[in-house]
Image (cartoon, rainbow, N blue to C red; front, side, top):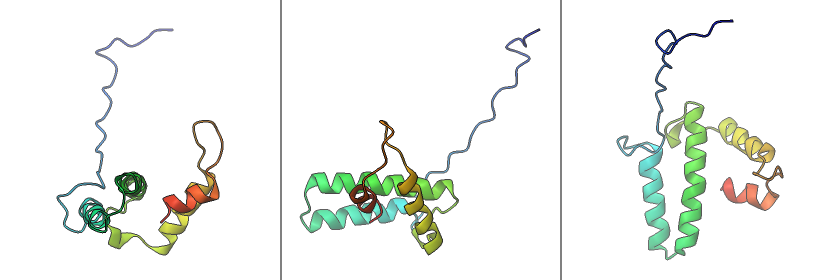
Length: 108
């Protein structure tokens, strides 16, 4: 069995990562997430609440981007239902599912 030398191996094709959090798009997730975070701070929510909510929004935006939705306007009821199913089947590092309260918090 022969192995290919480094020159003979094909270089991996670059993966174009589409960021759902780009602030270049005035109607994209990035701008709306920034506005929402500012709204929470103006309403005097704790910094821990703001940070946790931002973490969950980033996860949702990236999940949507992986499915081709880069703007909140593109999110439909079937996409939201798919995200709820994803959270239901999600497993933490220890292999346990998210509690229903954790699913609800992440889907707000």
